Structures are given as structure tokens and as C-alpha cells.
Length: 223
Image (tube, rainbow, N blue to C red; front, side, top):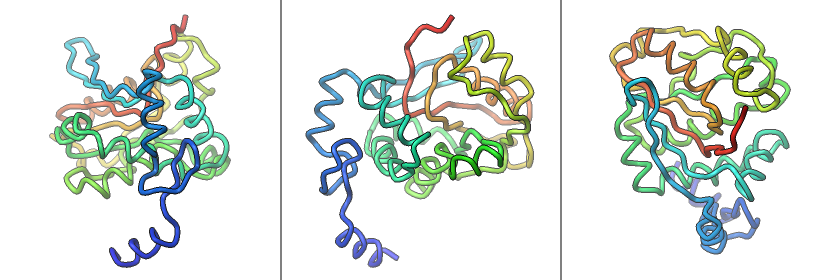
């Protein structure tokens, strides 16, 4: 398997997800420096919940070229960009230290209808790569289930977003999370409505603690 991967990497070397140049990584040094200079690359951990017990780790500020790439990844049939985002997570010491606190990584689910339309669940692709790389973190994609179609969150204000996700998700296979440290993975954190709703039902179902991991955080004020 390792030989095959090495051979394929030689034939098809990594391409930078930003500038599309071939190299040894899915993000080149030049583009990394641009992200840092533009204050977009910002590995950070925030605390939420009534007692500050829900930790949220993210890599980017949702703006500029990263906002553009996330939108391309989600809506314009570019699943290969998962490679770039994955690299940011597993190559950052702060993020890896955060990930070691969890047993399970669970991507925010989509309905079968939405997956059929898009072709893939963008959160699941990255979560799977993270779990494959970090053997201590197990991917569980059949714990959180989206049971109702909802409106697109980005079209709603804060109050509407909270209402939109109520009872939209459910838990199955509770035995897999009882007493476990569970990490939710999503692409963007704006108001936190989706992640907090999922965190709530995971805790009710028996998770010991719940954390949140996202590609980016949107600091835009939503009324």
C-alpha cells in the first residue's frame, strides 16, 4: 500500500490547492505565507457552552482566498480540495494537541438527497482523512443522522438558523459514544447553531464531552 501510494505520488505529485502548482505538499510555501500575511491563517481554540466546556478549534478566518476555496469545495464539485484542508489540520502542532483529547470524530451529516445532489459530504471527506492519519481518532459517520431537510443556513439570520436546525438531527448507535470524548467536524462555524444542536444531543445520548473542529470561523455579525 505504501509503495503504491509513493508510486502514485511520484506520477501525480501533490498540487497546491490555492495556486495549482505542483510540489511536495497540497499547500505551497508561497501560498502559506500569503495566508499568514493576510491574517487568514489563525489556528485557534475558543470556548463555548454555559460553563465554557465546549472547545472549538479552527484553522482559518472565513474570508479572502480561503472563503473562496471553501465555497469551491462545497458547491463546485472540487472534492480534491479536501487534501489541502486536511494537511492544515494534521501539520499544525496546536491542532494535533487538541485532537488528542478525543476518541471519535463525527462529521456533520447530510441527508441522502443532499449528498446525491452534491456528490459527497465535504465534512466527511476531511474527517475520514484525519482519522486515517491519526490512528487514535476513530471516524464514526453513523452516530449523527440528519433526519429532516432544512433550509440552507447561509440564507438565514441568527434566530432563523437556530430554529432551522431544531430536531433536524438525531442519534443512533448510542453505545458507540457512551462515555466517549466526541469531536464534531464541520466546514464553517458562524453562529454555531448546527454544531451546538449536535453537541446537545450527543451529550444527552451519553457522550462524556463534545468538541468542535471546523476549517474556518466566520466572524461576520449575523442579526
